[in-house]
Image (cartoon, rainbow, N blue to C red; front, side):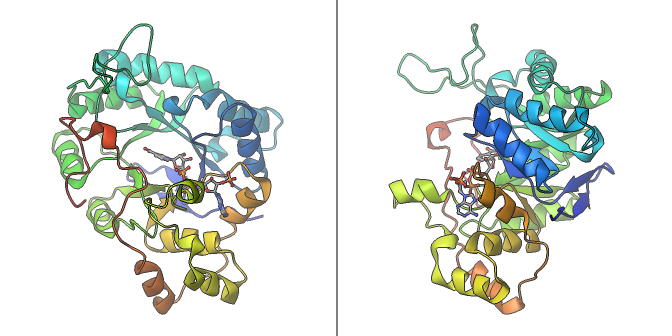
Amino acid sequence: MSLAPTIKLNNGQHMPVLGLGTYLSTNDEGYNSTKIALDNGYRHIDTAYFYQNENEIGRAVNEKVTSGELKREEIFVVTKLWNIHHDPIHVEAACRKSLKNLGLDYIDLYLIHTPMGLEYREPEELLPKDKDGNLAFSDVDYLDTWKAMEKLVDLGLVKSIGVSNFNSEQIARILENCRIKPVTNQVECSPSLNQKKLIEFCKERNITITGYSPLTRPHSYENDKSLPKPAILDPKVEEIGRKYNKTPAQVVLRYLVEIGACPYPKSSNESRIKQNIEIFDFKLTENELRVMDSFHTGQRTVPFAACAAHKYFMLNREF
Ligand SMILES: NC(=O)c1ccc[n+]([C@@H]2O[C@H](COP(=O)([O-])OP(=O)(O)OC[C@H]3O[C@@H](n4cnc5c(N)ncnc54)[C@H](OP(=O)(O)O)[C@@H]3O)[C@@H](O)[C@H]2O)c1
């Protein structure tokens, strides 16, 4: 069993450099995959209020802790503030709701899921629509949301705070105005979109990059060939894997760690969950890194097309 090495965040906390993704792992799938992951060396789990599986993830985490197999402080749990809760008046309540769902008394890392707010309605709707059927945007400034996130640290509800899907300009604006720096920016990161410029930008400011859709959602590509082609389907990646007795997915995940991103591969399959963390016993050569770099096209798996008209849309600049 491998444990992922940890990285020291800008606030002194330690975070394992690879975690389990859980988007679409709902109900028993979320519980089972988290349990399998914890049994196989994962100590870092990524969920979100939006995924509606915090309950299941928390149940698996709590079982490991109450059984005495793991200590709470050995597990790094990430969840995210959803776009409808951006107004500062909702932030603490939303965090407390996530804590309740998870059954935890603190969150290791709490992220603003995207810079783009959506209208808050009662009863709550995760994706509120306007009368034309478009997403109902709110114009809450993410800077105001960030200030409310900082208070959660003061209250001891969260150990670290960060952002997700922010571009470099938005990160810079937070840094110019914050009391507590974000520890990470969680963004799409795979060989097709390797984020080297954003990684460099964030590294210079002591902010880590955590990477989602690291395998470029191979199942989605099967159904829609206009999406970026996953590098795991390429014979060159298979060939590199053969040299180390590794699968293409392991080569991709190793590559992402080597370029400075912390990937979140999602799987609900036992053998793939085990496989995805067995990447810390080999190292790619300069040549192999160059081959992996050649897959970068900049094309996104998650283009947030329905939000392109939002005031805080983040994908209209290179990084
Ligand atoms: N912050 C954000 O806005 C945001 C957005 C998207 C995702 N995320 C986070 O990032 C995580 C990962 O991203 P993702 O779920 O979009 O995509 P992903 O991890 O790139 O791809 C997941 C898919 O890859 C398959 N897979 C897993 N391991 C494999 C392997 N070794 N070989 C072949 N196929 C494999 C999985 O199938 P099986 O389950 O059948 O193994 C699943 O269908 C999410 O679950 C979520 O936690 C965050």
